[in-house]
Length: 222
Ligand code: SF4
Image 1 (cartoon, rainbow, N blue to C red):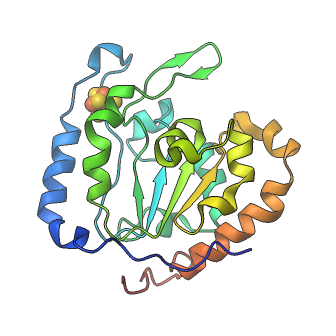
Image 2: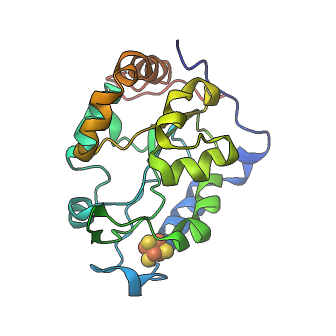
């Protein structure tokens, strides 16, 4: 089943958003030190926002490697996510096509069982304003439980597997995904329906949105 056709942004949203305004907002985020005391390697917000973007990747928080490079998903998780999407690195990092807003913009540190949760202050402070800066979105990939709680709210299932299994409920604008981390290989093996049914629908939807177009030209926005 395909995810459906492009949705229409809400009237009036587009007119309030300007490139200059978005650039200024992103500059503000990049100087944020709000939760510095909790960040073992200090603030380094990693995000990509352009009002022309059609696809939003709503992830968790940068890991250590992404913190070092400053490039979203430039790590094994990103390799798997690009494979799931069936897109080139060029398309993936084209700001006219893809925006990146993790739930926490800075690396939160590592605990006993992996990276710590995204800092909650981050979404509370920045997320609503940044989402307003993306009036042309047609698809949000909602990756992992933190992003799913925020973007799906009460519509989320009781756990990640149930939410992802119910992916058709959220189409065509939202698609919940598990985190593409190598830590989730066991989940992928236990849930073969994900690769058999969800990924083909994801690729079909991305093709509709010009993400598989080598010329880098997304279809005209509504
Ligand atoms: S995680 Fe978010 S709130 Fe904390 S310093 Fe980074 S940008 Fe600011």
